[in-house]
Structure formats: structure tokens, C-alpha cells
Image (cartoon, rainbow, N blue to C red; front, top):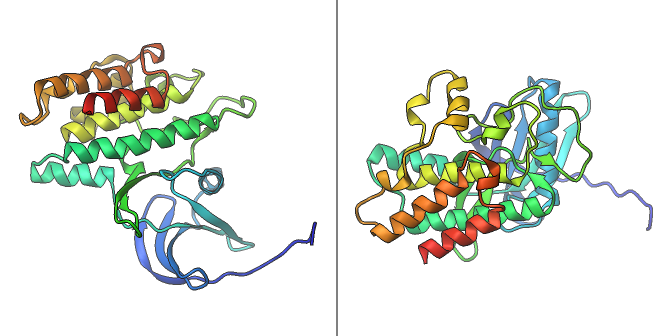
Length: 291
């Protein structure tokens, strides 16, 4: 059998569309062989060639990584001559953290602190794993943090999604990016400047911005949303957000609020050298404050 190429065409029963983004659709489907639900992410045919590699990289990293808080990809399929690509990944019932924040904001309620801490406990662990694998995510944000439940234990679990623009630091440097990489609402200051070296501390910054929003129900630069994205980029470089404690519920004790201030402020320091050196360090500080 060694050296033999084995081929097998697997079929999935599509049950319905459960999401749509700029690059494609996500369908819930059933795997009749393994008797489990899966998600099919299908790339839109009109996606330009320059963006197709992002779709492929998202699938490859999802398949390569082996961490409980990173969404798993099982297969990548291309249909020759039809411009169609899709991949099979684990089905995740639930909502992304961005949706949960928006829902809480509209209801004028807070996401339970215990849930916020648990989500970031898992996400920061996933980031540390990817950094140990020499991969920088570069697009960490609440929309890429999915909150679901383990189908067997029913425990709440979190999954880090979308490694489509991830930077593989194990490979020799290539030419600088021609376009901005990342979401202007969460992007680290060094990512806004052409030619700057990017490492895992950029993800720490984005995780800190996301934690701020999850704790406060508001983005630190919410007043700039809807305006030119250059304003957000300038704020990331120059503007110091109000302390987290400014917006926390009165039910949170003063020592805990002060501790969260320290953790978030260190995570979102403008200078990478002033931040936590790693996602692990940020996680340990957060758990120490919350204990």
C-alpha cells in the first residue's frame, strides 16, 4: 500500500444555510458516514483570485492545528473548471462573541463576567498554541471568537476562528503587505505602519481590545465607528482608552475592577515592549485577577 494514492468521494446532506460572509456561505450538513453534523464553508465564485488564497489558508491552518479551542477543518475540496472551493469543518452551534456583545448592548445588560473570563481563558490558550506553532493570527476580534457547547458534555466552549490572514513566522519573510491586514477596530498599532515587524504581541493587543469590549459592552473607540477607518488607525496608535472600570457594573468589586484595569491596559499598550510578552502571560494575569 505504501505510495498508493487512495481516492474517495464523500457525500454530505446539506440541511440549510446558516451564515454568509463576504467570501462565502456556511451551510449546516450531515455526514452520513460518521453520523455527525458538519459545517460546509463554500467560497463565492466571484471572489477575486487575490483573495482565494486566504480561503485556502484558513482551511489548511484549521486542519493542521490540534487545539480544543481552535475550530477544526476536516477536508478541503475544489471543483476543477467551476471556480468552486469549499471545506468541511466542525459544526458549531451558538453565537460569536461579537453577536453576544451586541445583543447585551441592545438589552442594556452585561455579559456575565464568569462567561467573559472563561471565553478568554480558552481563546488566549488557543493564541498561545498558534504562537508556539510560529503563527500569528492577525485578525483577532469578537466576531472570530465563537461561543458554543460541547455536544457531549454540554459545557460552554470557545473556538478561535479564521486563520485566513495568519502570518507564518516559520517561513522566510516575504515582501511587505500591500494592503492593511486586520480589522481597524482591533488592529495593533504596529500593524497600521508599513514595514513594521509583527509577532504574537499584535494578537495580544487585539485580544485586549476584544476583552475591553466584552467587559464594558462598548468598544474603546466606539465614537469613531462609522467614520473613515483612518481615524481608527490613528486612535490605535495615539489615543489612550478610558479605564475598563469606567464602564463596569457597580456589582463588580473595586479590587477586581482595578485588577481588570491593569490587565487590559497592559494588553493594549501602544508599545509592544510594554505589553504582555505572550498570550500565556496575559492569561495568567487575567486568571490571577479573577480568582
